[in-house]
Picture 1 (tube, each protein chain N blue to C red):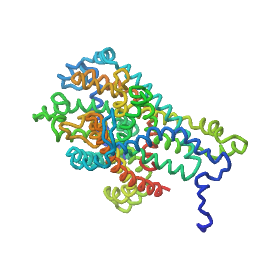
Picture 2: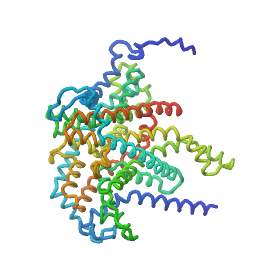
Picture 3: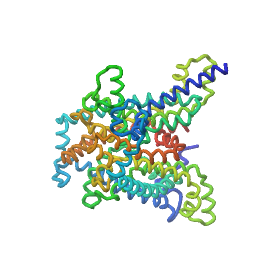
Picture 4: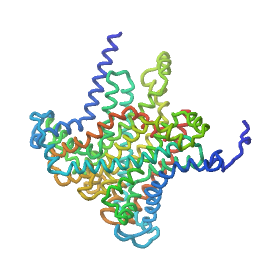
Amino acid sequence: MHRHRQLKRTLLFLLVLFIVIFLNLPVIVTVLNSFKATTAILSETNIIPSQPTLENYERVSQQTPYWTWFKNSMIVTGGATLLCILSATLAGYALSRFRLVLLTVYSRSLLMLQTFPLILALIPLFILFRDLKLVNTYLGPILIYAVAQLPFATWMFKSFFDAIPKELEEAAVIDGCSQIKAFRLIVLPLSGPAIAAVTIFAFLFVYNEFFIANIFLRKEELMTIPVGIQMFIQQFGADWGSLMAAATLAMLPTLIFFMFVEKYIVHLAVGGAVKG
Amino acid sequence: MNPRAVPFDLKSLVFGRQAGRARMLPYLFLIPSLALIILIQFYPFATGVSYSLREGSLLKLEDFVGLQNYQKLPGIADFWRALGFSGLFALTNVVGSYLLGLGLALLLNLDIPGRKFFRIALLIPWILPSIVSVISWRWMIADQYGLVNMGLKLVGMNPIYFLSTENWASVSVIVVKIWRSYPFMMISCLAALQAIDRELYEAASIDGAGRWQLFRFITFPHIKNVSIVLWILMTIYSINDFDTIWLLTMGGPSYATENLIILAYRYTFGANKVGMGSTIAVITLLILLVLGTFMLNRQSKTAFDQE
């Protein structure tokens, strides 16, 4: 009986392992191909590189502005994340601590806005930002990204703050502390890990984003990584080696940051699907 | 308790029971968010709707023409095709990603060694930047040397030109979209599955219920409400998708894979017809509003169930 169960576990393990490899095959092949010369990518049927080389990475570094795009991505993503987190912590705190009609209206409107087609807002924003000379600047996309991530960040903070007992602040307020001070001195220090997690999630979403950056960053020296790579595909679509190397470089920050927040992902998914 | 014991008091609903300056406090916390939302969402969404009543280009907006754009829209064949493709894209993606996601969630809910690792690995397609996913898939389905066509050649079949024939291009964008969507379904279903009391299964097994009966009478009823929310949510996400389609096919070949978002984008930024582009976007908004209302109702029901 025991051996039977052991066998079943092993078979299940192999089945899931096969599925995992199968579903991740596009990614695995991309990473492996990035270490092959383009000629080898096109001619070899073997997936594993027989003569591993870094020449694709050298070419991407030297002949494309990849690291400029990387710098742009970091500036835009960092700025948007900071702005978003600052506004969302405050709003999340208000939603968590006060039960008022207007706050419910606010929270519901956020949810509705989430479902709106972005393109409808991007058309007037493009005209507005052009008049304000914000097209082809970092500030334009930073503002839009900060708002795009605001609903999600606000709800995450609300649910994290919900878990911090209200009594702590009430005691402080009785002792003569103002509510804002109580938030700053009691709630914020207790929510360090939560703030870190939400920050990383917001960072991931903005770093990955293509649509908005594609409209507002049209100069090569200002492009973020996704827009830069897309331009590269259109110009050098046949240079598979460089494309695979650029894709591998682009996924590294995503994978690394994801490892830090992986344990919060269920919280995020459930928050999105069930609680809103 | 007698409900009349609590009189309806608008003031305390809006301001709470605080007095003096403290009553404004909750709203002070909202000021930074509200400022951003008004500038980047309310203003442009309202302006976008007003653009749909005008003619003009990105450089110069012309006069208001009333509902003319809306009257012209039904005569545009591109619109009906994009509407149809948006629907097909959403439907196939919801069904595909839900079935795959639920299947994987059921597997991951079993006692398997390395479960945590598998869970992380299966989330990868969801967290990757769209551009990375698309490059990976472009190679998989590349015309001659791509992995799929190499495989077809090995078994003696003719290569398939995935991105240059209309039907195969549609299949390709749908498959890639399902690939990018299933992890969200999986992780949400898994969370719902883990909330089910295991004793229910034991009791039913003792009563002689089979595997399918366990799923039908215990598992599915428990995840039904979450599932409905997920279907609506994924429909909204699919209709709003730009990246997957644009980066793979740009809506081609001959507009076969163009959805409403890409059509609005093409009219506005390609053909420079801001009025018609905005009109298409407003129609998309109306469709999404209906879905969003459904979802809000469903979510309050689900939240209620859980309390």
